[in-house]
Structure formats: C-alpha cells, structure tokens
Image (cartoon, rainbow, N blue to C red; front, side, top):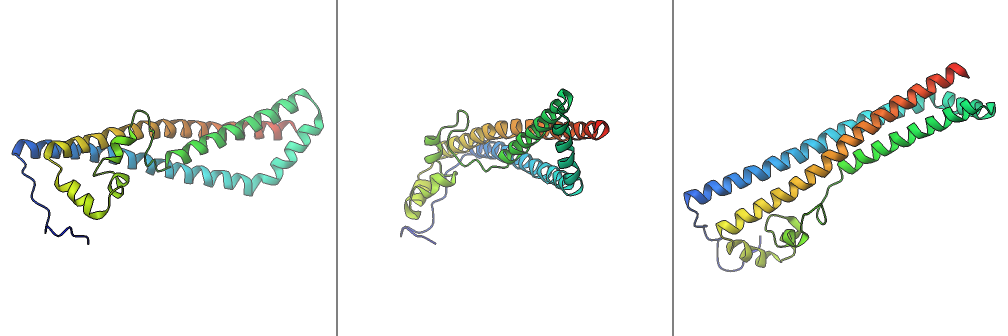
Amino acid sequence: MCDDGTGTPKEKDVSETGVDKVAEAKYLLNTMMYYRKLCDDKASILLAIFGAVVTAIIMIGGQQIAELFSSLTEDSSMFGYLLVALIIASIFVLVTGIFLLICTVNPYTGTKIGKGKTEEESHSILYFRGIVENNCVDFKKKYDGYGNKEYVDDVLSEAYITAEVCVKKYKQLYWGLFLSAAGIAAFAAFVVIGFIIA
C-alpha cells in the first residue's frame, strides 16, 4: 500500500444535498454498467447456442452437405448454381451475425466510442487508464483534491461514456442475433431443398 507520508486521506466535506447528488450519479453509473453486463451475458449465451448448432450441423451432416455441393455444381443447371450461391450467402450471413456477437462481448476500454472523449477518460479518477496515468502517490493526491462537484462530474462522465458503449453493444447484439438466426434458418432451408432436388 502506498503512502505519501501525510497519513490517511482526509474526509470529504459533503453536504446532504451533495450526498444525494453523489448517490444519484453512482446509481446512474451502476445502472449503465448493469445494462452493459446484461448485454454481454446475452451475447455470450447466444454465441454458445449458435456455436453448438453450427458444430452439430458440421458433425452430423458435414459429409452429406459437401456431397450435396458437389452434386449441385456437377449438375450444371442454373437452379443448382443458384441454390449453391444461396447456401454460400446464408453461410456468409451466419458468419457476419456471429462476428457481430463476438464484437458485442468485446471489452471496449476506451477511446473513440461515439462521442466519448478520451481526454475526459484520461483525467478521470474512476477510469482505470486515468488512474494508472499517475503513480500511486500522485493518484492519492489527485483523489484527495477532488471536491464533491468534481466527483459527481466524473461519475456522470463515466455514466455517459458507458451509455454510449451500451448503445453500440445493443445494436451489435440485435443485428448479431437477427443475422445469425436468419443465416442458420436460410442455410437449413436451402440444404433441405437441395437434398429434395438432388
């Protein structure tokens, strides 16, 4: 534990109104963090489900699907080529959806999320990069010098940046789910049609 030689950090002089503002700001930040975690959890579950489905398809029907591709391309009919193209397109849609789900669980740690300002983050006493910009002693001094208003501003900045991250993550989650489900459904439908006509 680092010590700057001045003893324990001084108590902050906070009025009752200030305490309310701090509590409200912390509640807002915690709410945004909760939504962020919820989005990550949903994306992780969806990745596991789609991963299991894709693995099952490859393990159970991989050989038959490869033979189907071969027979459809050897057929040299326009419908056969069209069906192969649709199957490949559905695989592309599925891969795009899974990629978006992976992007959703990507831990955004800084820098250019929408309108979020990195400079604001770098001066924050709440953001981990802002903390480690200073050595331990300087960080304690910076923390001790923080008044109630600065602390509330810092918490609100973090809440705003986290809200921007949430907006981006939920868009990726929505499109990842939609494209992954559509890709698997289309793939299954086109393969079944291929087996029927092959």
